[in-house]
Image (cartoon, rainbow, N blue to C red):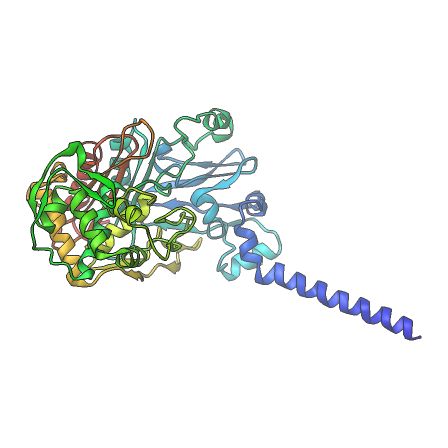
Length: 471
């Protein structure tokens, strides 16, 4: 009798554990499983669910499901312009990009309405939700066309809210008739059209000097003092050179940032110390996960660790002007720029503005929230002053706009090997009341002023030509 009781208790305990497992996976982890790109359930659901549309901030259609002769087809009216950001969704290829990450909204399983819940329970045909993005098709188009034929990325943000206004990676691909063209797309190993270059990690070059500026300002170094730039200097046996060995002569902080003086930032960055430099980098988000609808690799200061506890003098010197082992994504560089523009506060970036149910009721509305406080207001204003000087009389002059005060910084980053530098340009405008912040990178494009600034200027001009609040 005792043995039977033990068997019965063992079976009861096993059923209890199994029940807990079912509750955990089917209730607690249900949303996580649905979002997993390896899970085709959401895609298979679309035999009876009409996936909702994706729209830009002005209501322009970016993706929609069309039904022809009873057959559903996902179509993308803008073609390549929003790829690879928008991604795709097919039974054969699964999903990627926003189509994958927003699938729970698009098929109506996240915050389902009572009607959707009943339809889902009884496996009835139903309509998914529409998602309205913060993206502006007009800016996206300008960025896409300006970058076309090159490899690189453009990121544009509203620094006041964290809204992503444009997100372009080139080269891209046409998502229409994707399955028929898939073999050709994945065979393009040289230009890698599926790569999200705005999230890829690159050496930032001299754009990193805005981060080093925070370390110098925080250390108490007098930025009005003059420094004699002779074209190169030696720090701990390491030769630090200016681009083309150009001697800038006597410069203060503003002039050094405007002329992108490597020796100034290396000298005073080392004097400020690795602790101040690493603290400044961390406050700007290095070594931290960026909260966003898509996954973004963390930017790092050194290999093997995202934020080290200390740096050697030589690595610190190289890191101050964005070389050494520093890696950052264009998206993160845009956030850093936006933080300076927003008086030191980096807002949480987001792509989803709102979600509408099938009857067009708003079931989700994004609210702007701060992410990090990178600078004090005074520090942000001092860096802004240097960036304005860079446009008025410095390397960032090619990004100038008539009758608009632009704050900007160029960068020419050496990727290693005998190849041209990556051209960077970060900017925001108007400098006195910023409405847009931008980061542009042209891979192996040469100088930031020559390759990236003209692209940034086009986008800034278009953004500022539109009246506030007009959609």
